[in-house]
Structure formats: structure tokens, C-alpha cells
Amino acid sequence: MPRARLIDVDEFYADPVFAGASISPNGKRIAYLAPAHGRLNVWVRGIEEEHSDAVCVTHDARRGIKAYYWTDDPRWLLYLQDTDGNEDWHLYRVDLDAPDEPAVDLTPMDPGSRVLGVERMRSRPGTVLVSMNRRPLFFDAFRIEVATGDITLHRENPSMTSGFFFGPGGEAFSMAMADDGTWEFGAIDEKTGATRVIRRCAGPEHPVGVHPTQVTPDGKGLLLGAYHDGDDLSLVRVDVATGEETVIAALPGHSLCTAEAAGQGAPAMLFTSERTGEVLAARFVGDRPIIKVIDPEFADVYTAIAKLSDGVLGSLSSDNECRRWVATFIDDREPGLTYLYDHDTGESRLLFRPYPNLDPAELAPMTPVSFPARDGLPLHGYLTLPVGVEPAGLPLVLVVHGGPWYHDTWGYNPQVQLLANRGYAVLQVNFRGSSGYGKRHITAAIGEFAGAMHDDLIDAANWAIERGYADPAHVGIYGGSYGGYSALVAVTVTPDYFAAAVDYCGISSLPNFMRTLPEFLHPSLKNNFYLYCGDPADPAQEADLLARSPITMVDRIRTPLLIAQGANDVRVVKAESDNIVEALRERGVPVEYIVADDEGHGFANRENRTTLYRAMEHFFAEHLSGRTSMRRPA
Image (cartoon, rainbow, N blue to C red; front, side, top):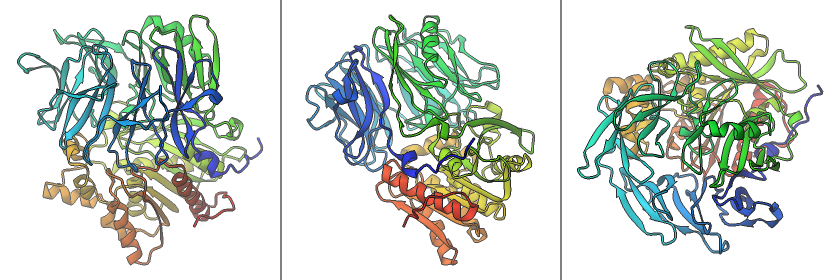
């Protein structure tokens, strides 16, 4: 194949022309995200209409909208928004009968408070149930009357280590973390308030909580992600009355995909019926994501929908009758294809391509790979090679995911495609601690920050070098959040291995990172950072944490380094980047530093993404000899 043209950074990081489509419960309209006022906003159009007939119903010119919700009243639509990436999410209401009117904030709160979770209450039409911390340290459950904005306390949370999930009638079930980190799920007696524990799940293999956690539509069972006497995460039903456990969905050698626990934008773990609330299908981790149908009545629908694309089903919505469906697909080179399918007629049509300017033939395929770590632990990842280039002796960029309790998966990734287009081999590895590969894999990371977790990355790069794909003199590393920490570990623990590194909102001091997280999060650290790294409140553990922190090894850094940071980041505060940059500049070591004043944990605004990745393009070109565009950013 001929070498791909040099695709401009703007083409990779422009906002999608269309994205996030869903059908209204009555099946008459479609909502989706599309550009307006320089940002992604919500548009609504009739089921048979085109975009030229659509109405823009939100008007945010400051920050794009990512999450919106239909209500059971066709007049109202809801969406979440924060301020410049500070993650203080508020719930807003839009009047579809008066779309030019300003949106109404249904959840006015003091700074530092936020909404987590929005769900319709089937037992109370016109009402949604939300969790929010009006009390700064406690997330309580509230009912909101959508039409009036009236807010009623539904259930007060008695502890910072507990929470609620709810049945179809609003009945509460508890999830609480015991002193030893065990997750306990219980039924709450509505008269006495007493909790009866139904199921326990060990903490270490659920570092970010148990996912999924929900109640069956009849209110008689809990649906949980559990290891169920094995290494693979399965979907189980626990009978509320008896505690009897039934496996609902399992796939030998594969675990449920819990990526959506990381936040907005990840693919759905479960697909549920709009009509009944029953689970239709579940997503499992594989070389490509695997969709396992659970409800036999959904099998024919899924078979028909799956034929629409060579990709994997990403998101799905239907009307109340489960007749009309809107399906969006994951693909490594043709992302986000979205179709409307009518199951009664069998007819379907393409609604949109989010990135019409990208030619799939010019993009690089994402190939699953696997190899053992030096201690024998199986590692899985993805290798993306540039189009039209002999796959030998290439400069290599190791792209490290965040979390670390997350995982890379097959699909379109603009960072990976940009790097491959510039001539780099791109390797992503699901190192130990990554989710999706079983209990043994995730718990193998305990005590291994800057240890075996980093060794896994070196082993991955060595694999690519030994196979002849990569030039050992031109290996770079890039990552965000935990991946940014990994980039800093790379240039401190192994300062001679990498030729260049990019740290994107990464941790430089583990103790300071934990101490500066929002206070309401601190109890939840027991099963993740405290267990896997250490508790900075303990002097001995703090000393070990510092020994694993790049800031204490900054004098070893001699690798060219680019750092990017959002000024409003509440997860990895700006000081984490400032301190590294200041220490390097005091030593006279050059470091490039990009700070976005209107961003938080990761850049959302198009112009900031473009600035960052144009800078990264030139940075890697200078130090790894890849291709670059002519324009050098200031």
C-alpha cells in the first residue's frame, strides 16, 4: 500500500460532526451531539428528518456537553455540565417546546458538590433519582420532579463508606465497605432502616467498586459483577430473599468489561430493555469486545443489528416498544457509525458518520497481540503500525492507559492514529492491574507501582524490539493520568531506555496525589491506592510511596520531556506537574510545559486538544524522527 498522506492534527481532534445519538422513549425523535456555538451541543430532530431540520436545544459556548438524558415526558430533556473541567457536575433541564430558552439548573449547589448518576423512576412518572453531595462529604439520594424542579431527599447516606442503589419502586439497597475493605450488599428494611447483608465481595479484586450493581426489574434480585469461584468476572443474580446465586452471563477465559466505571464515554457494560428493564446483553473483554446475548427475545434484534457494521456494538437505545433502535458501532478505522433499525419492518439506514473527513483506508488497523511478562504473567495489548511502511525498525511509542484499573480495548483512538500516521509503531499493553483480564491479573499489581507494573511496559517494548518492529534507539512513551505517572517513572527508574516522554496530567508524588484528592473520595481509597500503593498516613508506607514517586528521583531525568496539565484538575492537581517542571528548570534541564486554564483532568475543548497534540507531534518528531506537519506550535 502507498504511504498514507499526512493527516492534519485538526482532522483527528475536531469535534465529531455527529455523536452520541439516542432515540426518544416514544420513538418519534432522535437526540444527538453536534457542533454549535463552537462546542458540542444537543440537537433534536424527528425520526424521519435530516440534520437540516434539527433544532439545537442547548447553547453552551464554554464547554461541550457529553451526557444527556431523555425523560418520560417528551417535553423535557436533561443534561450534565461542569465548569471548565472541575467535575462539579450539575443537572440541567431543557424545554423542548421552547428550545431557545436558557436551560434550568435543577441542582444548584455550593462549589465542590456534584451530581453522580441520573435515572428515571418508573414508579414515579416525571421524576428522576440522583445522587449528590449537598452535604460535602456524603452522597445522598434525591428525587427531582423534572417539570417543577422540586427536590426531595429520598435516602440519606449514613456513612462516607456506603451508598445506595435502587429498585423499580425506589426501594433502597445498600452497598457499604467494611473495615477490611470487603464490599457488602444488603436489603434495607423500609420500616426499621435495618440492613440485612445479602452478598459480600472481596475488596482487592474490585479496586474501584463492584460493577455492575443494579436491581432486577421485579425488585427480587441483585445483579452484580462477581468472580464466582473463578478468575473471570461474570454477571450474577443474587436472590434478595434467599441469597441464592445464579450466573446470568459468563464467558470462559473472558471478564465483563467494566470500562464504563471510569466515566463518560466508555462503552456500555450492559444493554437493557427500555420496555421491561431486563438485561438484554453484556459486553466482555476480548481481542475485540464480545457481546453476549442474555435475553432470547433480543437475539433476533441483535443478529440484525450486528449485520449493519463490521465493528462491535458500542451503544444502543430503543423506543418503549423495542421496535425502533439506534445503534452505534466501535471500529478501529470507521468509528461511531450510527444506524436506525426498525425491527418490525427489518429496514435500516445509516444516520451518520461522525468523522466524514477521515478515510478508513488511510487509517491503521489495530492488531491484538499477547506475550508473557518476565515473571510469566500473560499480557495482552494492541499494536498499530503505520500504513504503507515496512514494519521493521520503526520508531516506537508506548501509549499507557490511565486508571490504572482500566484497560485498552480495540477501537478508534485518535492519539494512536495520529502517531501511526506520523510513522510510529504504537504499542498499548494492558499491564498488571488493568481491568478486564481476571482477578489474578488485577491483583498482581498490589505493591507494584514503579515495580512490576513498569517492568510490564519495558517487557512490552522489548517484545516489539525483539520482533523487529521497533528501533531500540527510538522508543518513546506517552500516557495520561496513571499513564502520565508511568511516563515519569519511565524517565526516572529507567532513564536510559526512552528517547522521549510525554506526561499528560500525571502523578509525580503519590502521597501528595492522595492527600489532595477531594475529601469525600478518601475512604474509597482503601481498596485501590491505599492497598495497591500504601497509605500516606502511615510514616513507613509514606516513605515507600515517596520512593515510588518520580518527584524524589527527578535528578535522574535527562530524557526530553513534554508535560501537559489542566489548571482545574481535581484528581491530579496542577502542583503535581508544576513541581516536576520547577525541579527540572532549576537544574537547567529543558522541559516543555503546556497548561490549559479552562481544563481539568484531560482536555475536552477542541482548541486545547489540537494545541497539545500538535506539540506532541513536533516533540516526538524531534526526538524520535517521525513525520511532522510544517507548522510548529508556539
